[in-house]
Image 1: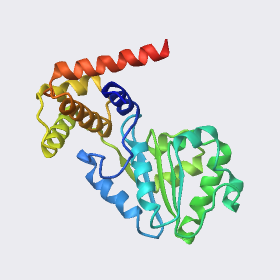
Image 2: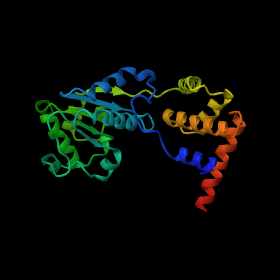
Image 3: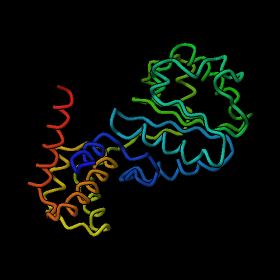
Length: 245
């Protein structure tokens, strides 16, 4: 595999979501709360909200992955929610989803649930405390602004609610610079700003890209500078365009 092919692969693949590789910023209390969901087998109910790209899906997947070794986890990512697959009222009887005592139920983008999915979720709210279930839900808006049935909005409004705060570009730059320092990277300070302008916006992907660029610079025995990053990223884009033509 050539260096350009490796960079192309790194561009296409995201880092596996973990609670550790999500830079908390102003969300430190939220991260601590999510860690408690990974181990405690008791009733709990947490709702996260924020616009697309703020990290909701990352945090839900990371929490589900971390909890799976310690408790039963039912995770419905946004793809299943949008397709209407995997969360029907009949699922509560074990056809598609088995809900057992102590389970953690994680549902991304609940505003996209169809009528049957909303009805099933409302039923779970009514039995969650008795069964010792933990609920972790996410949506794009505060509970009372969700386009869901009234009684379900009310139940969600009674959960512990967190708005996810985006990292500023300054916080991202500081995190990337600190990450580079910990890894002993030698690079032009302008590289971080270049990646913020031209790379992916989520921090785990930016860190992964920085590590890949550093590795390639070492293999080519060239300093990690803005011209090198520009050259590598342009070569990668040219490769993509050639493959698509």
